[in-house]
Amino acid sequence: MINLIFPIVKYGLLTLSLASWVSMPMAQAPGLPDTSLQLTSSTQSGSAVSLDCADAEPPPIMDLEVRQPPATSEPPPRAPFRDPVFGRCLVHVTDRVNDKTEAGGLKNEYSRVQAFNADETRILVMSTQGGRYLYDAQTLQPLGMLPLGIDPRWSESDPNIIYFSDETRLMAYNIATQQTTLVHEFANDFPGQNLAAVWGRYEGSPSRDGRWWGLMAEDQHWLTSALLVYDLQTNQVTATLDTRAWSAAAREIDSVTISPLGNYFLVYMDKYCAAGHLGTPANPCGLMVYDRNLKNGRGLLRIVGHSDTALDAQGREVLVYQDIDTDHLSMLDLATGVITPLWPIDFTHTNLGLHLSGRAFDRPGWAVISTHDSDAAAHTWMDDSVFLVELKPNGRVVRLAHTHSLVDEHQEHDYWAEPQASVNRGLTRVLFTTNWGRSGTEQVEMFQINVPFRPRNLCKPISAAPMADPAGQSSSIENAALCSPFPWAFELSASGALTVSDPVGGLECRYWVCRQPAPARRSSLVDRVTLTVHRNHHR
Image (cartoon, rainbow, N blue to C red; front, side):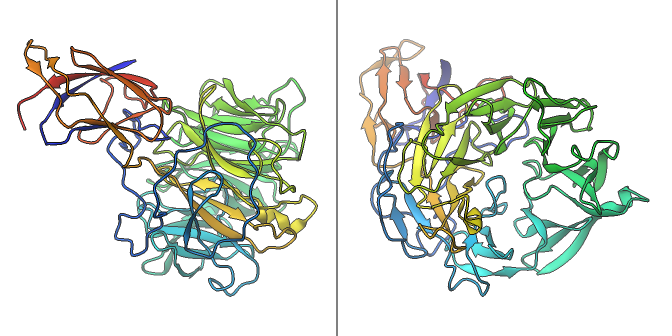
């Protein structure tokens, strides 16, 4: 329970609003952007076309019932529609026939990759032939093909810049000037070595602020020669770890990345550890984690499935992953190594595939999960869908949409049909890929799920019963209301204490920035909040 003190300022309408499905952080961890103010909708920024459905937002589905995806035709591009089962508003973003000249389909790059630029006015889309296409994030209209290399990653500060890897070079492309520039030549940092590439190998991403990059250098045999940390701000390699003495099996690394706040370097190794054992600096295997200086290496998982880094509700850097040993969605604390099981995964019906996205760094405490299999029917609550999970034990689940994608592991083309949902920084938009039942083809399309925060038509008035302020004078709240899209209860005592019980969690204040008192500078999820309301005669 958190006591928050707010003055009443008589603006004619005082609204204490409860954030809807996902909680509004009360204060941010150091270095994180402040998101305690009310966020805007996806259509604000002068969009000429609304990406939102016109009807009222229905309540979310938060149960674990098995719900069958209906047989429906694929909606046309760029026309909002509601998921008939879960009620969320979706938009078919791409048009594989008219948006490009290449064969195949169009998709979001990967669950661990941010598709939106720094100000979320542009989306980067990938074709199944490897081309990259730029889209307007407000109108969803295609803006053309971009001349990019491997692993394109948006700048976190400049909305016009996309970084990408070109063999041993880090390059930058400016979408406004259409110019490509060299940022750093990593071959100069490894004199005498004949390197083939320096990169994150498809799945790595820089830190949330874009400063720190976790990369690996590979030789001409595509074996890892070194791990390295690059500081984009100073344009310097700040740490290296020579891996040439490792075994050939250990040098077969799936991917590397840096953690969201840049504190930890993660190595996803193809070589897994024996049961009951973890990797060591002398015998690396499974998931190896190092400090940013590439020291203090330790094995934290003996084997790692699909995963993504994220921030939990307290601002801690975590890995959300498929635990292959226990068949759970789990969370790993990168600082302590503590594992927290979140939800069991039922593989008794189908060979369920999962991808995880923790890219919503401005909404810590949540991750997006997408699933796929070869059966159009749903046998478990997770099947063939996209949903949110809260990053805590017995946390909440918010189910967003069915994907309508059939993924047959025996069909090579169906790799492209894996939904691989990815989320934007503020958890307002989720992108995923689907073949809409066209198994065995590359005819995939990208869809967007709009994640609303606060419907505006579900408010209940607070009683204007007299209250005693701290000076003992009588007062009242005029025209105040609590707003929440879901069931909640509140109590207003005669002393002015307003206690809110919200099963979804999180308090939003429209007219004040809500924070915990210093020094508790961490984000917070709360299910029950007590507000002590004080009178203030000043406007």
